[in-house]
Image (cartoon, rainbow, N blue to C red; front, side, top):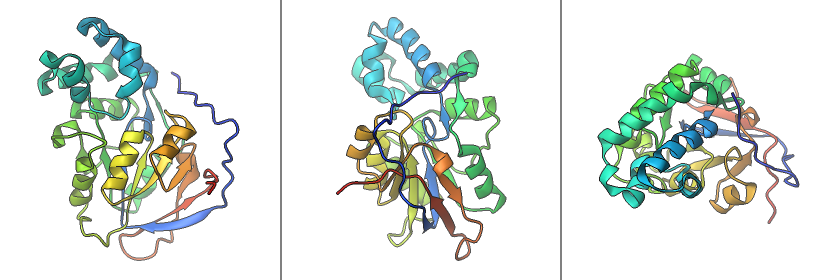
Length: 248
């Protein structure tokens, strides 16, 4: 098993701790809860050979986007939901040993579950892919899952996060919703859906994450801690520590 190394040398992750309260949390999957980069690279290498495209070219623009949207551009004849579900369903089965959980993810999810706080997963992956990875890594399945099948347009379109807000009954504009994301496309989608966003530097450079406009930037979820004394019923208070010092 291995994880992706992102060089953060020179970035100042020493911002003082802050506590922020939200009505609900929306998690991206890959790069936020798990890191399946090594598996995805092997997967797209095989698919690239099948469709006649360089896997390196595919991987430059694939992270955080739906496979069906990538195939629409590179191999329209294979851009069907049935094909994508089939090929993504094989990924955890064939490359299960190549995925790891993001530091801090399991503890944060378990705290939310134990205290019955509202959260959901909003991902560009299909249902077979998401359920496969959660099973392989023995991570909790959410009550609410917004997957590639749930929307017509994938990230950076905000439709998936707007649907996530709806599923948590937090569509009203006064609701404070937090998105946790690693991919610039997902960060932009979260912001466009009216959410605050924590950007994780797990799959992209600090510069790429910053350019997408998150509200906070952290290395991983070990910097995000659930505060048990959350104010108000259903509210979620988080402590964000060791975040990137944002320069004006």
